[in-house]
Amino acid sequence: MNLQARRGTASVQLLCQLGEELGVSTAACLRDTGLDEALLADPLAEITAGQELHLVRNLVARIGSGPGPGVLAGQRYHLTSYGIWGFGLVSSPSLRSAVELGIHYLDLTFAFARIWLEEVEGEARLRLDGSHLPEDVRVFLLERDAAAIATLQRELFDTPLPQRRVCFRHSPPEDLGPYRQVFTIMPTFNQPQDLAAFDARLLDLPLPQANSHTRRLCEAQCRDLLVRRRARAGIAGQVREQLLAAAADMPDMERVAQALHVSSRTLRRQLEAQDTSFRALVEEVRQALAEEMLRAGGFSVEEVAARLGYAEVASFIHAFRRWTGITPGTFARHARAGL
Image 1 (cartoon, one colour):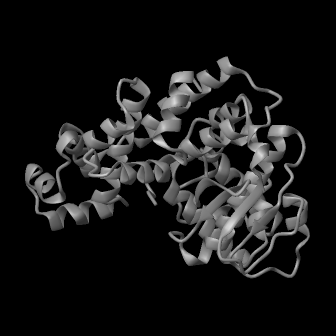
Image 2: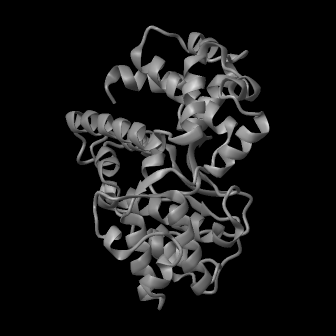
Image 3: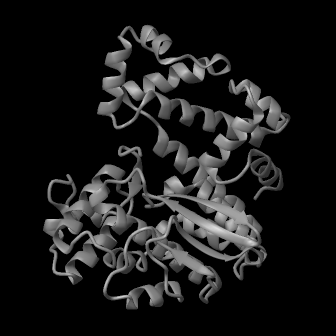
């Protein structure tokens, strides 16, 4: 989890509003975050994921870390809360296309959970993973992100999407009312996975506001915004430049440390101070280069895998799906079609 990742202020505004309704002042929510109410009122301002996480911890410390409040938070996240990312979803030709766009540009949202799509035996499953999240806010953030997904699905169709099941790993709360209201069915708790599942045939339903021109425009703007937000400063930026310069023969940490005239131990410590790691930067560079080659065309999946240093194509495909939620072949087809 990159706590230095940039994001908009809409989410912290919504969380402060929830706090006020639950008896927690905005000042208490903002304590020690480095944020103030003037910044929250600026629609062009950006904060870090770490600042939002600190705010969530302030809120949860006062309302309790149990289940329930996360669902109340998630239903506040409307399509309009996400800016250009939300417009991209609305203008997509189908639910499948919207889900793939949404997952690919998930870093433009306020989600903290890792989210990906699985299709298993006629069932579409949106999986959520919060294993990397701090324990004191894990339930809140998982429920918030799951409820936000349900809210987005409802707004894409102007009606709730029929769910087969919604599952949470944690124990149920006493008050289950908000869950039925948001998810339309009662979730099951103490399950092995966090997920929302529906009939896979619904993925190919056309969206009522589909517009191919708007979709292409939104995706281009999402791509540009993501590049700007991922721009690295400091030592992380220097490491990224070294990796990009030698992408065909991706250097290890020792080589990069030598090029930057520091020890590998010092480099590791400096990257940790920026809430990242050498491995995370390697993954970031590989993803950016893979997308660039697949979007440009002229390279097969096998060639892209080889150019990025993967010994096996299957390993590259697995990594690309983990990064984007879709396979490199699907990404390339969408790029050629302008989706």
